[in-house]
Image 1 (cartoon, rainbow, N blue to C red):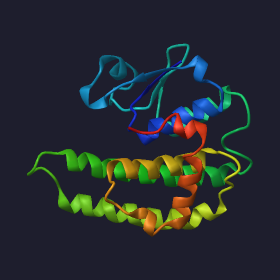
Image 2: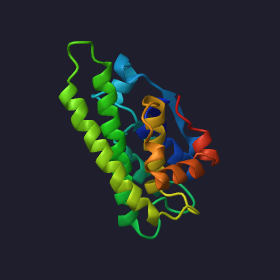
Image 3: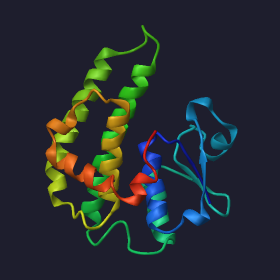
Image 4: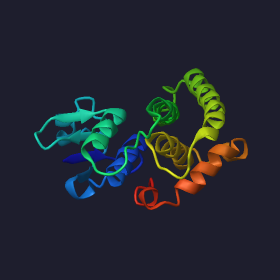
Length: 197
């Protein structure tokens, strides 16, 4: 298989962690791509030039991190990354993905040239981000930190993306439960091996 990724993408990081947890790294070529440069190989796999994109052995392309992770879980070995309560874990995954999506929107808007940026949209996304973090802070009380699953993986990938792109945003002072889970999981090998840069 081939996985197109960028080191900064929290969505791609989530998939890279799943690949490692399911013992599929030796069967996967991880190919770094810069989506904004529209590399032809990535466009052939995903016409909207987004990472992650996974090319299967039969040449079929799969995009969207929840879909990729579900496929990885099915073909890999070891315990399911969806655990025994799949709905609860998928809800956490969705929360993490919502944080990622909102943060990426803010980042892309900030990269626009002066005069094209929309302060009103940035404010809306910042408000959405804050509400989602408040919600996630309560939800992570139910996380079992002794077992990695796609829910807590998604949450931590999102939080570390915030640190990467918005170091001035002091979320750790307000959200102690989120800070705790990030500190614990970022010390594990699969997180260290995929740390964003």
